[in-house]
Image (cartoon, rainbow, N blue to C red; front, side, top):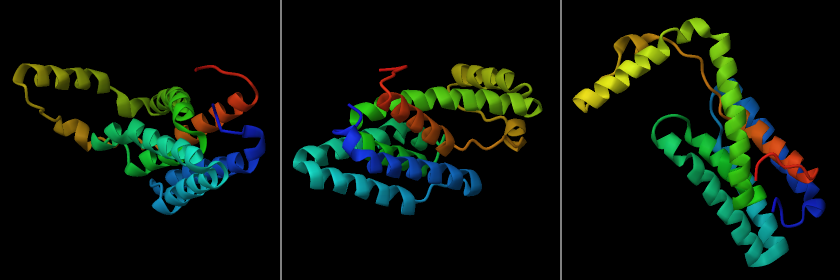
Length: 186
């Protein structure tokens, strides 16, 4: 279920598209997704569903927020992405609900992989020897049971990954496919 009533909530879908698009642009420009965008988006969706559908709508939106944040909390804790990315997916969840957020997350993952491949292909010199060094690091971790960072790899500047972009594209892709009656996943 994408929304409780997708045809009657087209303005809510427009608000979702606007939120993720603005987040992607801001993330690309300043490498941060501000709370001033994600929290109001959550409140708008939560307030709408609560006002129109009562407790059922409240829990529909609240579970979406929880699942959205939960899906990206581990990568954030491991330092792989910012907390704004997790909150953005929570905002997406507020609009589309828990189940749809999980499916949209799969689309986001596919688009994120394509984005990463393009990033590596465009910056081949920066990644030369990266996988070999990664294998050495894992081998040292296995043998010595201690993480030994490679000082040379820490000095190399890697291109920034703006996760707001795959989150926006994956979310829009999922919603459009769902509204048109198509499904690639789910």
